[in-house]
Image (cartoon, rainbow, N blue to C red; front, side, top):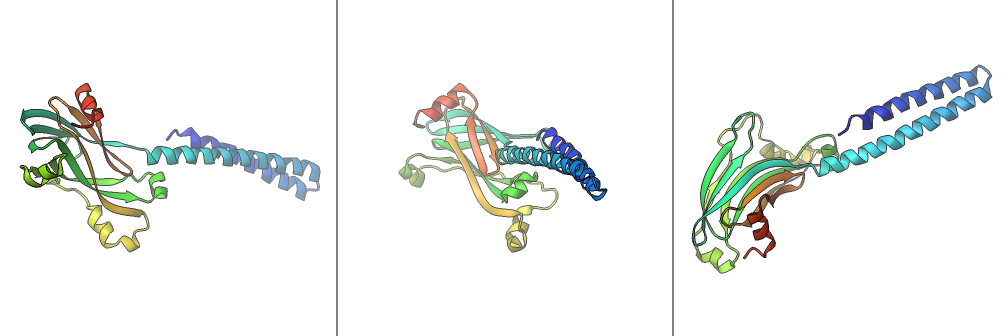
Length: 227
């Protein structure tokens, strides 16, 4: 959020308040005309400050509710019919400054990533709280239901092996009635087609996981009906 959306209204409000208080003072000293001008001028300044402040809050709301963070990049290489190797790279964190790179053998037509998501109330999001997530599972997925039931499956546990601090998910779930900031706890997933050479980026929004192609091969696969 740009700082001047808050600083400028604050300064204007201070000037307006000073004018208004000065006008009230002149009224008490028997100068109603001069005091009235001061109060009126102060009211105008305060109104402008309020309008600019509301605009800033509106922009802040939009910015916060559409804020995205990277979760992982995924690159696909084909190893056989409906058989692929997926390389997933998670961004650096305080616990893993180099990031985490993992390779998975995946059967199917599409890859799928799942996570647990803790979503805050919109007003808490505006204050700066971002949706919390924990990656849960990476798996293959078939477009045909019969293949999904009968063909070879592949699924991997991608929960973090190390956890620092407090895991907010079980705390919020157990004490949800006492947690007015929490909107909901839910599972979120994103999936995309697997083709040789495709690359994707997975991001977390305030509403869950999304995936986007990052090269031409992936973009073409995503826009061609995934078949």
